[in-house]
Image (tube, rainbow, N blue to C red; front, side):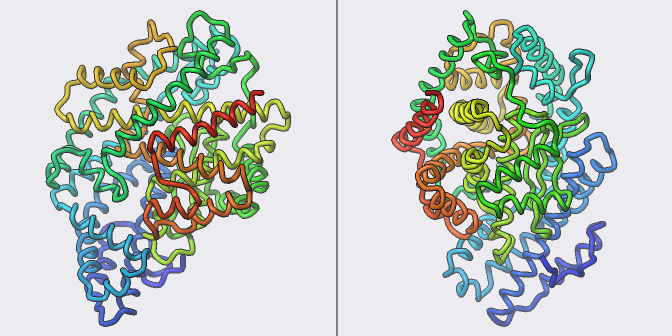
Length: 566
């Protein structure tokens, strides 16, 4: 992005240097439609510069959670800059919304979507929530600090939890049990600290909802996240569809696993190992090899995608390997001004890392494909669409997985694991989402009530095959490993909706590669210039989560899975 409003060499150092740019926008005189469009462009540019500054502070902090200077830089933005921005954003939104020239633009669908979001932000803005949100963000980042510091010692080596989890794929059952107990005992050591942190977050979030006139944070977030195209009831319908359609399939897979392994009981440390007792797949050795192979994989699917990864690599916009002091998880962070995103993950040499890489790679391609759009807001697709970009890439990219697995048997095995993972993941998504609905509609709950509710929901989406005897305390606190609960509340069911969209796009791709890929790219290029159902339609799929549609999609997945196994 070439700056037209801010000086090209300007960098955010403190609020005092940033404030004049907001003041100038508030004083900007609009006497024509072209003035109004220029004003919107200036607002978009300022948003891009501010968001990228925050992005780099977050990226650097998560890459090295032990560096107190990086943490301080992030917290400085959250506590000393962002609170000042919020009132100005509201005033700018008011100016955008009240302009006589708005009606000239909102006839276009892209502007209609944009103005709808502006109006929603105005409706939800409360000045008393500004300090609460600062406190929430400060507390949220503590989750990464706590979990990033977690390590275990196995065989005399200090390992991150991600590195240690690779042992769960080993053939030796005693080794797997040791790794499972060691990892979960480490997590269990921090359960009280994580419970206390979560309690504080719930209290603050509930107050935000009350301040805005909502009975609970769940209803506030439904509107805050711009869920204009579906209701809370639709979330429950999705839970029911997963329970009715997926659970019988997952139970069959788990019973087959138990039979193949020949165990009387299937323990929680028996789920990652190959059921035929083959050594764990080793698709790459280090981050450099992972990147090289992913570029080859993407090149087979779409050369443009491979070239985009090369650009990210040349710019140093990748941090792929797991290490001590690095925050857990993985993400793709769009950089609004640079136009090139950043991928962060914790690779340790497993198939799961390949899935993460192509998942975040899908998000990255979305960023590249929306770079042409006029306003920053047009590029910010809703998560129900953004996650289609990543989850569809997981499935489409399987066509190029021979880059990771030259052996045909290993390639087939990797694809089987991927499809079984799709089936296993959706019940977990429903579990986390249902748990959040309970949490925030019962904000005054006790720790005992929370544990009871969690275990009840877990049981609903559990096959009953696994034996947790002796590990009940691990199961009772297993929700704490889900980063989203702490850092991005209610951002999770989108993965479920998007998985359905991804399967439908993959089905189109299997039937006709060119048509399926073009539909995928067409959807992504639109950013957020159409409604969610219209964006799905652009890809040639439906935005639906009825029992019938979920059954139709997973009948296809089941067939593809069994064809691989035959």
